[in-house]
Length: 261
Image (cartoon, rainbow, N blue to C red; front, top):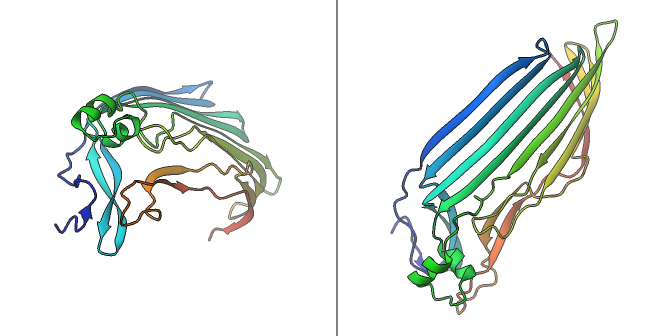
């Protein structure tokens, strides 16, 4: 077909993809405390999803060799529950503190996956019974969704008599590990990032010195399961799994100068 012009090693999974449907529930509040010097935003939510779309990858044979083909299929049911907190505190007229935290519990509730059966089954028969016995991923965490995220940021200013202001500030961010796929076998690891900055603000202009990723954290920012076709030959139908990683920039230092006109 024009959509899939290859001879696949396995039966093509291409078919019409159903739309996602979700029921969303959320309750929260926005509060101002201590005479307005502190704001606190909270939210608790749950999302029940039917037919969530999931990107998969298969490999195929072309006239020139092997290639990889991404496709989309629907997860039976999944559920996402979470809590979000965010606050801003004015410690003094020139010193503020911001903080935030979110917890996400994202789980598959109903889905049978052939790759899962291939990984778990001792039979490797790719039969319907193997799929039913070993292919369920119910209870697994959804891919590429961290359970915990948080940040802490602050800015302290020092006003000067001429209307200028010198300042220092920074932020610390954290993100817990993310799984690559619904099998929950490979993951990124936790990330911790520290940014700092200092400068002078003259109203219409400012100069800022900054340092980013001062922890020099090299944990992948994202992960995607893929297929490595380099080890395949015309006589081999084995699947070589690989991973595509999005890597962060290392420790950086720099300066910015801005003029408003």
